[in-house]
Length: 122
Image (cartoon, rainbow, N blue to C red; front, side, top):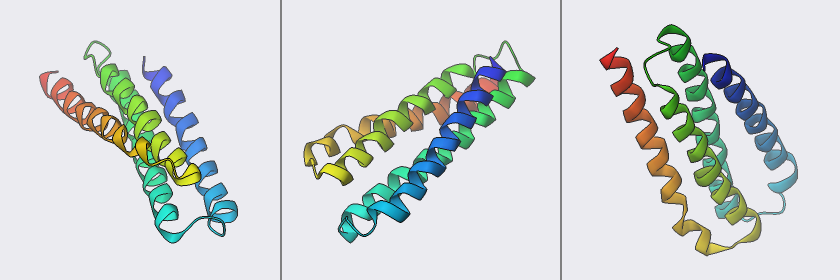
């Protein structure tokens, strides 16, 4: 399980850097400052949680029976829903996507609680 999350964290980190670079070089001139800021929030949380997934991989390697993997899956879901909805909202201007963004935020928060709880219990 540790290797899975280390690899997943690496892939999400790679994508976060690439998406951030794409935004800085290609989108910034095309988006309003408000929409660009929204996109940047998505990239920021994407990168924070790519690193969190790496931490889950290290924790899973240290404590294989701890169940920390659930936190990693919650972080991955958060990246897809929270950051993904902000990316699409910023690029398309589709405002209703803002209604699903908090679901990804809840996934992030749940991931942190699960990670802390599972490590503490082990």
